[in-house]
Structures are given as structure tokens and as C-alpha cells.
Length: 379
Image (cartoon, rainbow, N blue to C red; front, side, top):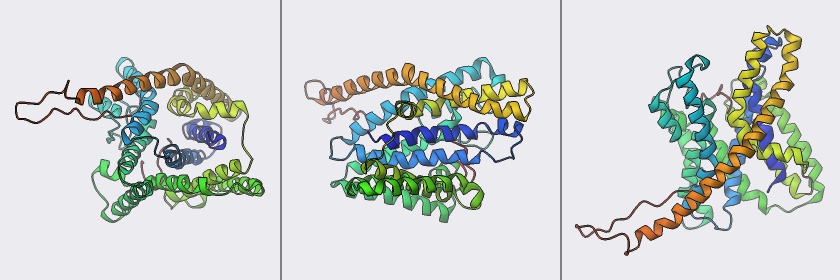
């Protein structure tokens, strides 16, 4: 486990929380857009994802199908559970929802990680923060396809080239179809940046003298990332957030390899619970914002509610991680592992008998485990 990267995952999740406290910030007297920096948490997640996929598949220990089974069991169970819960609320108490509707077609697309454009123009699934998971699943499929090629670096290179070509094609052709436009946003280059880090960083020497310079450079990049929306508002998020995010992740890994790691149990716990925090935080932020409105909160009370919101988000995320995410992930992995073992048996001559046409019956192999360019919502 990369301890510093685990901490960055927690940081990324809490950055996104700021985005959904914009109304509370307004009640506190802060200007509009004051929480926009929180969107950078998504970009940090994407860079980390690209890097971790490379590192965890190093050595050829996973097959493409095994990789997809692993990813699906890690991402889908909790997301599906929360998606179904939000859909149930949309059915039973639609007045509590904003732009989410009880549309079964949209529900099916959300569960299948298929992006679609809602009536409000956003490419948001039933759980609106799930738009980032549509990108993640796209990346996993491309990465698994690259794993099928002979030679590890050929697969990585081809995956990176596809991502780069997709972005340049989008910039040149400017597709009108919203789904196609969604998949060619420059933000996908952050996966490629993470892949490059995953291939290069393990090959760097561990030099103790690098620990503090790496930490200082990473801290500076973090400040630049947070200020990017104000410094360069005309640039795409892949530049204002993605580039410093890549520097931050690289510095975190170099610092740890040089002997400087964040080992405190509570920060590691928040990092481990980051996925649950990300998928549940909007329940907590909306609850706090509603309480602030009901209390007619002035600037002082609204500002005091910020730490309360983060404590609530942390508590709910950790509880969800322990009570839902971990058990559901374990259950999914057992089920998909059994499915993976059953597939060869189904394809054996003793079970899969020839069809009348003379062709054998082969079941498909089991599988395992945006947004606008400048003002995309938080992950």
C-alpha cells in the first residue's frame, strides 16, 4: 500500500465536499465560486486511478478478465446500492429531489455506467456524483484491452495514445452528440498522466535526501491546484487541476520511497473510506445546508456549520465503508470469483455440447473487477 497516496485519496474526497457546500459558503458571506477549488479533488482521483492501475497490474499477475472482475467488485456494489436508494427516494418523495427523477431508463443507464444527458443539460446519472465513475469504467475497459496485447509497455502505450487521440479528435471535430462529447473531454488525459507515473516512479531510486524537497514541491503544487480556478479561469481543468495533481501524486510517492510517509491511523482510515465518503457526502452536505436555511443562519452560524458538515461527512463515510462497502465488496468478489471459475467448466465439452449447425456453444467470458471543460461539477 502507498500510504501517502492513500492519504491523497482522503484529501481528494474532502475537496469535493467543498463543492457541495457552496450555498453554505454564500450564507457565510463568501463570494460565489469560492468553493470551486474543490473540483480539483476529481482530478486528483483520476491521476491516482491511472497510476494505481499500472502499479497493481505490474508483473502480469492479472488477466484482463481478472482485472475487470476486480474493478467491478470494487466500484459497483456500493454505487449500485446508493443509486437504488436515491431512485427509491425519487419514487417515494420526489419533492426531496432536485433534478433527479424516477426514470427507469435513466436508472438502467446509471447502473450500467452509460452516460446520458438529463433535462437540466448535465451528464449526470441518478447519483449525480457518479459521472466520474462513467469515466473510470471507460478507462478500465481501455486498460483491460491494452492488457491483451503482447508486451506490457505496448499495452500501456496504446491505452495512453487512445486517450490522447480521443481528446485531440474532440477538439478538432467538436462532436454534437452529448455522450461522444462527454468521452473526449481533456479530463481523460489525467488517466494517461497517472499511467505514466505508475510506469516511471517505481523505477526511480529511493534517495533519502529527496524526501523534504519532494514534500515541499508537492505542497507548492497543492497550493497552485487550489488557486488554479482563480489564476487561470480561462483554461481547461486538465491544465489548472490535472497538471498540479500529477505533480502532487508524484511527489507523494517519491517522498514515501525516500522515507517520509503519513502513517497516522486516522488519516489512513479516511483514505480507506474515501470512496464511501465520495458517494455519501452529498446526503450530509444537503442536510447541513437545509438546517442552515431552516435556522436562517447568518454568516457566523453558517461558518460554524462548515466543520460540523465535514465531521458529519467523515462519520457517515467511515460507517458506510465499514458496514456497507467492505461487506459488499467481499461478497461481490466471492461471487465473481465463482463465476470466473464456472466459465471454463461451462465451455468444456462435457457441458457445452455442439449445436445442430456444428458450432460449439461458447458463453462470453466473465468480467471482473465532464462535464464541461471549464466548469465541471465536483466528483
